[in-house]
Amino acid sequence: MTIELSVDGAAQVRLWHRVSQFLFREARLLDEWRLREWYDEMLTDDIRYAVPATDVRDGAGDALGLVDDDAARLRQRVEQLLNGEVWCENPRSRTNRMIGNVEILADRGAHLDVAANVVVHRFGHGRSDAYVGKYRFELVVDGESFRIRRRVVVLDHETLYEHGKLSIIL
Image (cartoon, rainbow, N blue to C red; front, side, top):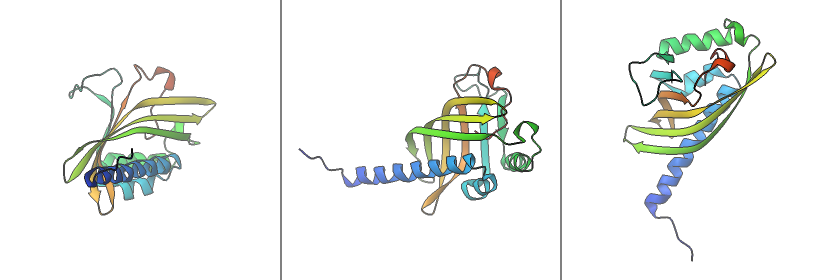
């Protein structure tokens, strides 16, 4: 017996596919260190990029995080990374991101709330590290594509001790 998707179901699958392709492109740009292109083409002017502390659970909003960048600070981070000003990224690391379990949590009309699992492998300076966690995005519709207004990376690690500094954009 063949079950056909309804029109609404087919539209949801197409939207999920578009979102997934967008996230895969973002991963590729970051892995290729095409950070200016990533910043200019994939982010909104009011972007927030956050990496909460690894020992804070259950959304403690007043806790200090590892990263909490607005657009200006994120642009500065990109320029420092590309200009060799971040000593532990000179020479820069090689990264490889694996993204899975992409899920559209809510369609709010003007934006989508999206979740995905991620593993970012970082190689450099004789080390290899794996950052394991979850992405949470607020994606704003931009024509046939999207732009990221909020990007939160919740790491599953209890500590980053063995990883050292968080010097890459997760």
